[in-house]
Image (cartoon, rainbow, N blue to C red; front, side, top):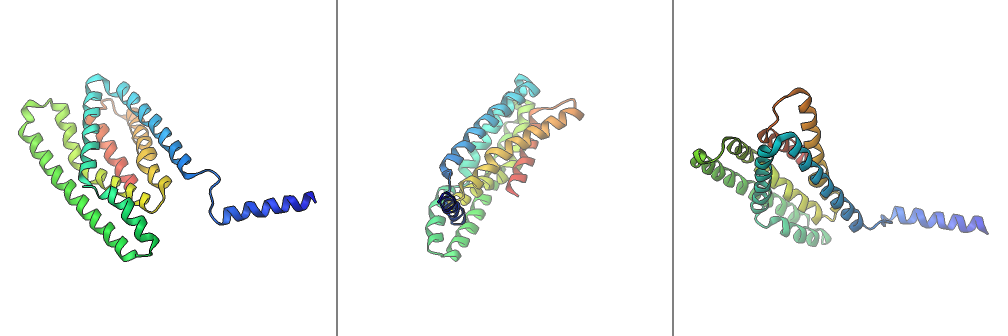
Length: 212
């Protein structure tokens, strides 16, 4: 009898696995990922504050915050639309509409980010004399990062639209800060002067890797 019960439980277990049911709800995993991300970002900023010093870290924090805000603006609401539109049309197997939406969203986001980057570069150039040199150099790097950062934000929303919240969270929230920390930690071994501009270049590299 015990053997039959054990076999029954084993069959039920394999059935759950084969049908894709989750023992741990995805919402809990996403919550765990967000918690780890918060710790990683806190650790990243503490580490950079020690490496860069007060002035350079202030420049980095300002540029990083500005990049986050501009990236959110450049997606022009397509991130929110993606989560609703893709899930609805995926359920109806309307793949042509899904592919068309993704293509247009990518084009719109890229175009908006390029336009904003150009205006940012012009603005920095106009007010260059009134902006501290290190901050100005750091802001210029945002011009290069913004298109990639905006597309990464859109990609996250697209994955969420396909009901893949875990895969959506990992690149931007986990891999990106880890790559930045590792890149700067290795650079410290070979370079004496690590400044905010260099840290933003590391962010550029990490964003491109995560987007790929």
